[in-house]
Length: 342
Image (tube, rainbow, N blue to C red; front, side):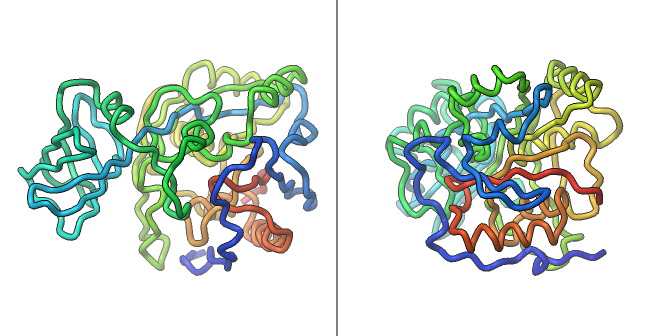
């Protein structure tokens, strides 16, 4: 079937877009979708799992990837790091009234003189000062990048709440938001019930917020994102399978990392780049269930969950969530989905 962008549209009242986190991570709601819709709270998650099930988390950490400043000409500029390139260089989105030219400089946050080396597609190739590690410079001078649909600047609360409690090395410009619902107490409770955990790393790029710009989805090209699947995670998944239990991905980023690592055959450990674009009809190789937030209309993530659980199932679930006033997107509520055969 030829899928179009309009197949993945829905109307969302603006007031359902969560603008701030709840007081406690586990206060969020959880919509169990199959076998029938059930309105739960995230603290009820253990009731949906069984001993021996494996939760796979994305342990990436959000960088202070947003910087403001001026060009040589004095014009205002906003920089959003897409990804560090190693050393002191990075790819970035640059917003300015006129695009900066190669060889020009950007003066960011009153502290960093950054050289524009050129373009790489829609991104700019930048060189930062070599006075310190690039990520360390960003952590010191940059700002936490909240998603564009959160209509306020990041505050002190976001510094902790827009990170998962298990976040490790900085590398992302957006949080793997399904993981934001877990706190240490819930993780300990799950472990005590015999529910296992494993980790992957997928560094979320700024491209995750870029709209799909083609009507015919066969023409869409995904941004690439770096991921790492440890050998220990491959072994944990094999043991879970052997025991007849389920692999439950916490978030679409965990799922994309695992499915990317299994594209060419059996799941393999290692580092690679993912440009995997999942549409209905995709044959999932690893994930049996998925914990995920509610996604934007016409987004590749909405396409992914529609592939995982079926178009009609997801449409029905989203209509129910809107009717029941669930909170949407990064700081919003969650769903528990199980895989449906394509």
